Length: 58
Picture (cartoon, rainbow, N blue to C red):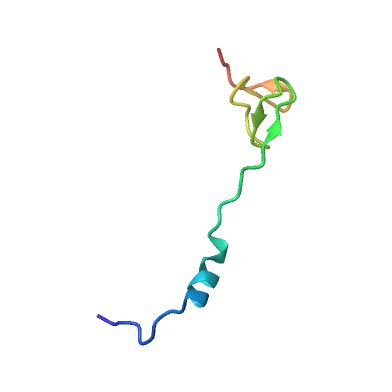
């Protein structure tokens, strides 16, 4: 099995991991029920999308 010839420094390791951070989801209020939802997705609370009901919810 091949092994690394030199130790990876903490600087190089941390620079490689600089893009691994998580970001918070961008939530927008639903125009029908004002429940927070993801943009361009059906509202999980009322089931509406683009001003019309597309999913029947109880």
